[in-house]
Length: 156
Image 1 (cartoon, helix red, strand yellow):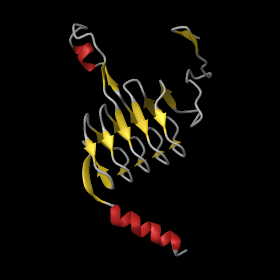
Image 2 (spheres, helix red, strand yellow; image 1 turned 90 degrees about the horizontal axis):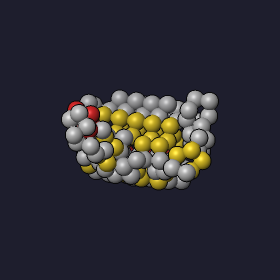
Image 3 (cartoon, helix red, strand yellow; image 1 turned 180 degrees about the vertical axis):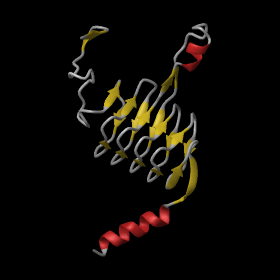
Image 4 (tube, helix red, strand yellow; image 1 turned 60 degrees about the vertical axis):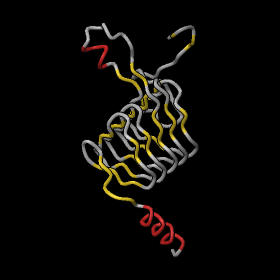
């Protein structure tokens, strides 16, 4: 298949192959850090710009969205732009199953996004945050818990 003169290959399910998971859909070329794991049935949308840090876990069924066609659709195409906004997921972030990260979000390092959470457009999550709910809300700072977990590992 060709798109803009570039040869593209797809598997039997129509998903472009990627090195992270054969059952994940990675659109465009987002920047994904070393050691990051991406679960099956995940949509990683790099159209509006996406940076995912090192050693993140993106669980099964997560959607990270960097563009929107809502305005274009509901204005009968009179607003004829696709909205795009870069999304950033810093290092060591865990995103739980079936969470949705909308356009323009910035998630700080060492944060945990609980399963099923929806992070709304333009939200900034500070480092070491536990976030849960619809819409996603910061439950608490988890820096001391993470340090405790690191110390537990050293004592094993």
